[in-house]
Image (cartoon, rainbow, N blue to C red):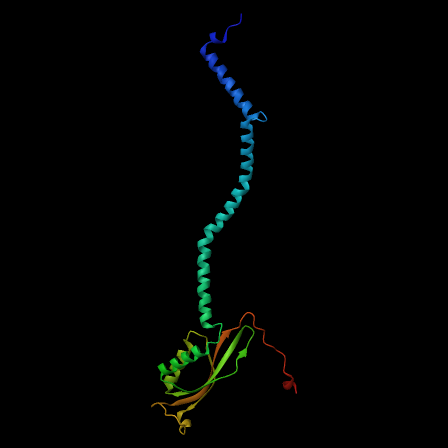
Length: 211
């Protein structure tokens, strides 16, 4: 004789309701077209799309960690560029250079009697700007003048020195500083960088030189 559900012992009723709940939940997860199944499918698709994004984020974290290092390197390179532009400026800046040389001469006790600009010599990556200088002064003052030229912010080469005793200028029209013992003519050369759009210097031999 069948027993009514209500007459079942409460543990059996609890097991029945628990099993029914499991069946309904499973049907909701796996039954096609159910809302839970749709959400589950969308979640799996989102998880699949998340994997490549996580890989991209991981690779970007490396650049984030190196950002401070790269910024420090860029700052150092900017300072180096500024220093190079001071040593070899982009423009000739002749007036500034002449003032630098004159200041070095005055502070050393050397007199510059004549300064003549020579033709600019184009090179492959820069230009040479030579000046012929006629100067005189005490021997150690002249040595100090050369030393100060070497400490200027711009690169300077001193060459073609023709030094003599101050007696060779005895008949000159200008008045020499007391203690002057050395006089001479020398070439002081500075440099400026070649503009990026400037044409390369020609290496062809002029027709007049071939004759």
